[in-house]
Length: 361
Ligand code: NAD
Ligand code: UGA
Image (cartoon, rainbow, N blue to C red; front, side):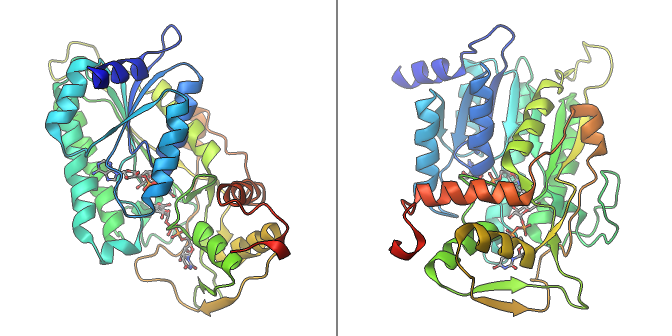
């Protein structure tokens, strides 16, 4: 009963017409920020996360504590647990599903391929199976990835560009997700929006990502490894600040529309959409490091390797005109400012706000 009461309270919108959103991966980086943004404007939000140990569980718990302060409850469970999902959908009429749970990371796929199949393919299908049977069917927004563009050398990437050359198993599972979404839209009339995020960074971010691990190692005086392209062409990423991505997620939810259902009770097909959410200005990895050095006031010890990492897309750059036109998406935070905010958070989270010389690391 306590559990049920907490679920109901968490899902209660605080304004008329408020959405009721189930957020998967709510203890993750993007999930935490999206949940807070929805709650702040008065939507009902319930999280689900399996708190896996891909990176520090303590960080996921700290994010959970942040959400709990705003009365957002996270159910501890796996998106492959169909019975749990059905219980939640029986209890609450979710208007939307924001699906952010996944096995992220590009290199880890070479060590643990099964976790990508479990979370990114089987987990997605389990969620869609429950959504198709739900009454009402929720509109679905989920995280695909810029990595689907793979070895496509034509930049900037537009949504209709080829995505048949994934460079990693991670990318292949995200691409598979887009095709699975097509099937569920086609057969069951589910409204599904896929968002191709481009290397998202910011406070409460992911320790496995370069900007985060570089910060940690630079502060510890440990050498970092910079993968640079060959032929003088540096690798680059269209690093996108979390607040910009959150705005894109929220307006995707607002414009998602309801599903039509397989009975075709409503007129017209349910939308199947895909959008790039990037920053439109790629930055090389050496430039990323220079900005971090400036904000941290510490010089990095660098190993430079003149070839890309196995599994990496060499260069990413988003064309966001579709998201601009249909979602009003307009990224405004450049890497300089975004990393300043990240470093401020990082130092405060680790209790390192003292002057550089007196820091004990
Ligand atoms: P994250 O790892 O911080 O968050 C994912 C969360 O999902 C984690 O808290 C994890 O515990 C949870 N999770 C994983 N498998 C689960 C399962 N089977 N059941 C329940 N919970 C599970 O990652 P993030 O950076 O917040 O990414 C969110 C989404 O965006 C992911 O789908 C990711 O692939 C995608 N994405 C992220 C980026 C980025 O740069 N951060 C870029 C492109 C796409
Ligand atoms: C990131 C996320 O980790 C993926 O989950 C996500 O799907 C992807 O963005 C995306 O946009 O779709 P990636 O851009 O590879 O993947 O992020 P990082 O691992 O932080 O790498 C960023 C850049 O730094 C890459 O060019 C990488 O080669 C480079 N790097 C990374 C280094 O030079 N040295 C390192 O030690 C680590």
